[in-house]
Length: 294
Length: 312
Image (tube, rainbow over all chains, first blue to last red; front, side, top):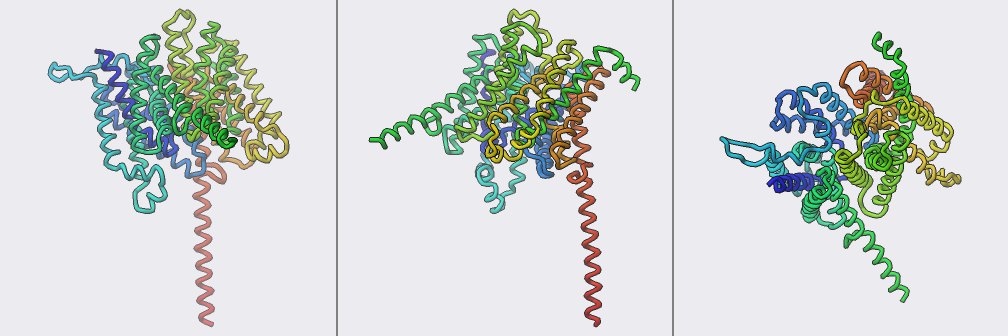
């Protein structure tokens, strides 16, 4: 049974991150995903200190606030003349540092150690069960991730056209009256939500892997946005299953193995993608060259 | 202040204090070049990528020393740099996605290896996880000596190759035209970043060492338009943050050095963004007010002159 819950949790993480990751990769903001996954940390710790529990709406809200704050600060520094990657670096390291300091100052009150934030504890997911009136309803993390996934699908589904236009041609989107900035922050809110509900199970840095790697893999496999999202989720789920299998065999970190599996799938796509793969392109060039010589 | 004096009286602490200052100095100096080359986040990626290298070096040798780790992390860093370049050159992914992919894959691998080490029969592994967040007080004398020597060497190399690095930071095409080995110099700079990252990991940690490369350089950029001054200022900001970080974290128990150092650097950054002489927010606001006032005054003069002319 625990295998089932772990795989379900991992797949939900992969689905949440896979969907929003596509938009991050398309808008060339992959590293903002990295920044958000680090900088929600103070929000999580503060919410934890206030509420004392790990699964509250407050935590989600605080993380959302910090996620949007991060994007806002990055944007503000960028406008004041700092290069975009440097402003990302300044903002997320500062916020992450605040988070780590809070954790180490209140380490006794907070049952939240730094390792858990970095690596996650997907192996313990099925111990933390939600019960109503003595009836077990399954792990809390699954519920949290499920709700997040529904919200993400609902928001992206409702505003699919707007998100699509904002990703490919923000100038046109602004010209025909779509509030580009609003959709930017909406997307960042979704990224923060996905990050917060995933961090407990896969850890902050592995969220980055799930955000960026499956989406990049999908980007190499298709040219259509719709199928890119589907492929990204499929790659994420596949790497979850593959990674879990490997981690059981090797007795190593589950989240780490999942990200390594995602990296492996990316390398496969990078080399053998039918449209953009390195090997396939080389072969095509060679056959073209030989046909020209004849 | 008394606390500060008592800290300096402890010879071991003296060394650590000195080492962290030198570390801040050298990463600030190197960071300014990577900032100008728009490669700030490469440092972050290389820091994460160093983790599997460090783990493999430890698994092979069983020794915890900076020298061994430096070799492992150096090799991992070179592979990571190559990977980033390879992905951006041979696919339609942009640099940010390539950075993210390399960063998370390497870090995932590092965590897998770390759990291997924890589960396996590597007796002396305690403290390897300190590398994630850094604890300067946990360093031993020989580590500090290695760290200081390497930091000093980094600063020396940057001073000697200042002209070359300046050229490839601003105009690599021109540098190539003049016959400089641009590809070699770029690789060398990348290697220096790797070395700075690895040396700093023990004091600041994998996750936050990037801040020492980025934040002082960005702060220094606010004060000057000259590269020489910028590099010196950035080194100074880095050194001061290193010093403050060690001091504060050693006087409060349970406080890791890395985050405090990063926050000290961030404080310098906020000071710079507010009070920088030309680009600072306060200076900009004052300039705008001055211009506005002058414009209003000129407007009044013009209006009076117009009135005079119509009267005539």
